[in-house]
Image 1 (spheres, rainbow, N blue to C red):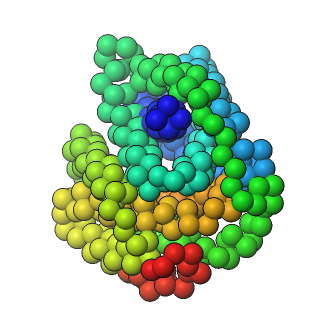
Image 2 (cartoon, rainbow, N blue to C red):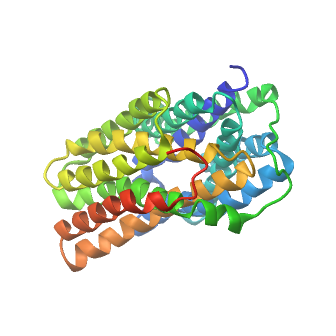
Length: 354
């Protein structure tokens, strides 16, 4: 457990710090455009980093990248505390994203090379989502007793804990270390990565559309989004312990995700359902990718890049559809894309018996 705990605490810290700025964005910059840019810079940095970091972890090992990611997280958090210039914060948030891009694929590939990777992957996804929720909630609560950047202070300091604990993490080496056949990995898992773009991106669509669609207060939206993350935590823990066959699970989850997106047009109660499906589908996708022990860094780097691409591209496309056509059209397009994944996932070059 002493090897696994630093990974869980590390992803919690990285994700919590990434969301700790969200409740206080108006205090960091003026104007929604600049606030949005500061928020998005993190994802830009992460998206650019996850694939090279995954390949690098296959060559030099996972542990150096785990440590580098946590060091950069610590540094970026400290810089946010001492630098107030909004333009500089853009660069700092991008560096923070790079830190996540180094840590997450290295951690996930380390996990996938362990004998107990199924249960551990559930714990990792749960810790990731718990970090996201904690960053939002605690940062908001801490503004009164500790100031606007109270959440950043707490989670920056906390990052030192998993960083120090990485001394207990042993290196893992999968077959094929040193070789990077990115095209081959992408070809073999193409439809799995497409399913990650669409099914994980669908959660971003409902999150992005709902504020304008419903006109709900920020407080109510925060609760609804928080419940979606809680559902993901519970579902990922449960799914990782029942040994579900990946391909059939992704197929069924795609149909259920389509239903959830359609239902969310009528009621925000569907957020919990969507969050639960997201937890199940992520575990199924990770378990599918774990079946090929070679080049796990590259494999998980592409998976993380697909996830970030989905969270970036699908909300943008859905927003354009909503503006040009209607909100109902945006929800319908997203639901149809999710349902299509039930068909296309069968084209994967399976390593596992389905």
